[in-house]
Length: 566
Image 1: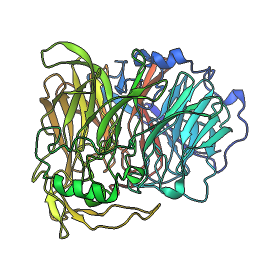
Image 2: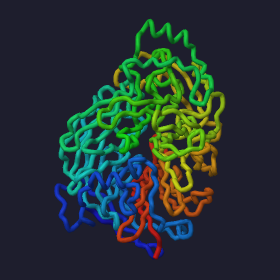
Image 3: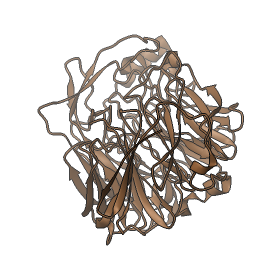
Image 4: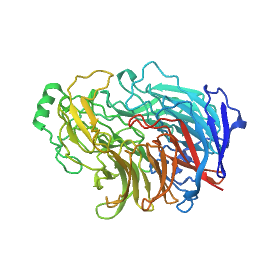
């Protein structure tokens, strides 16, 4: 490990630390902060009330991204300063959400590097680099969105479509299992989800003609326990003509039925990647996840029918993977407006004003959808957070303009909620695009868009930070940003939300009204979901600043932890 010079600003020291070039084989106990005790299932179950650790990539099984400490709050956030900065070996798109266990932080980078850091000082404990296979195929950058932790193990999905288990104390690989064939376009960028001796993981590759899935593996051995295919063998559906909000999608149903009779059900190459983590309901033993676009993205002529369960919220049995229910937002999507932002489980008001268990999802359409968890039905949808124009004009050979563009709305970026205010927070993109269709046959393992979606350079692009009342669907407040937003957001009991921008700004807002209370220039795009934790009674906010490949924001390699000045 190479340690840079010690810097200082104000009264909070900044240690600038550089990662080692080689993974350490062993780690001595003297270098560790805390005792790295096993992460028990009970700890994972109770993570929503844990004011010390950050045990899940989205804070807890419900995926609220709500941290229950109010030490950093609206009154003192102006005193937030960098505590330390760790620089990884990899300068590339950075989308990791740090996990913190008893003072030890785990972060990932593009190309599947994993670091264990002292969460109080930023000092490197160990560094593991995945031994990548000969074939990697991935959309939207070589990203990794974090590890999962259970027992004394870390779990990570890899670009070459593997699931690996590492020793949490040393970083040594314990086992690996091949999830799917990278030669066919499968890859892994999402953080896995550990629960009750299993590790849950989906797959990306919906742009390559894969057949999407969620799989459960044994934590101890890597043995496959169950598989749920996000594309059923009968993917036709009900020939829906309107989207979830009731708007006509301009489908030619008769032409699709004729195509189905001619070519059959295309379920084996229909896409349906599962980009982000499932929410886990331990009470009902069900999980909820969203499914991405059909393949090819823009050419619907090769895939007649509703293309189930693409662009849908889906619930399955946690123990068996058996189907329970689904709700499809856009049937036969030809605009790449897939469902990718992870769902949230929380209490919501139903249509009669009664509290029920609900599921929230933010779509690329720009709506927050509110569902009844019992049957996946939609209770309401929010006001649009971004402009919507010309929906649902069909792609053409010359290009048809429609808003939102294919990046959203809300991209993969996870939302956060504040259950005390009944608000959910989302970051938005406004990128006007044209949609062009060009029919091409299945290319087996190569990008299969069936056309293109192209940013209109002469039209302005921007973003929002939006707060939505999920009991009414009304937007409580909205703050415009100079660039489209991608990465994620964190809410805290201190009345704050934290999120970053592609221009390097990391900001804190008052969660009740959107007033900007603090900002920091990180030097590279802040396009990763922030986390929070507490060590020795001191709360920290941590975020990655490495930019984003999808929107081409400035690359970097910084993990930055902030705390209050003394």
